[in-house]
Length: 151
Image (cartoon, rainbow, N blue to C red; front, side):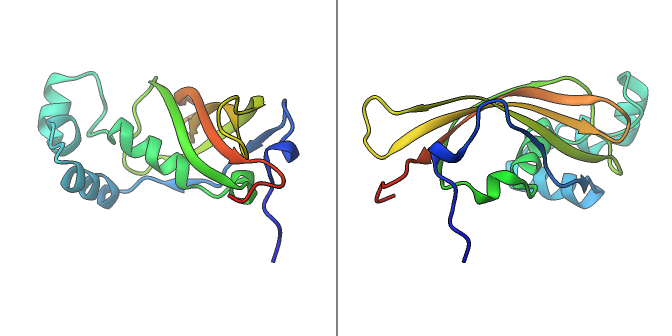
C-alpha cells in the first residue's frame, strides 16, 4: 500500500493535469434528475437553438465542476480530509460529446492556525475542453492532514 501524501509533501508551484472524460447525454439527464434543474438550457434542444446563442443543449455548470473533482489525478495520493472552499467562473459552454479535464497548480500550502494536525492547500483550477476552451476557472482550498497527525 502506498502512503498518502501529507501537506508537507505538496510543493507550491507544482502543476498537474487530471484524466479526461467525455460528457454524455446520459450525464446531463441524470444530473437534471438528481439536482432538479430542468432548465430548458439543459433539456430542450429547440428552446436552446431558437432562443440562445448556444449550438445546442449545454451541460450544467455544477455537473462539469463535479466531474472535474472526480477525475483521477495527483490529488488521489493526497491525504485530503475535506473540500473547504470552491470558487468557479463558468466561462464557456460544455456540450454533450465534449471531453473535459482539469489543469491544476498548487498556489499555497499552510498549516491551520486553529486546528492541530491539518493544513490547507490552495489550488488554481482550469477546466478545459477538447474544443480548445477554458470552460471553468477558479480556486479550490483543500484541508489536508499534516505529517504525524492522527487524521
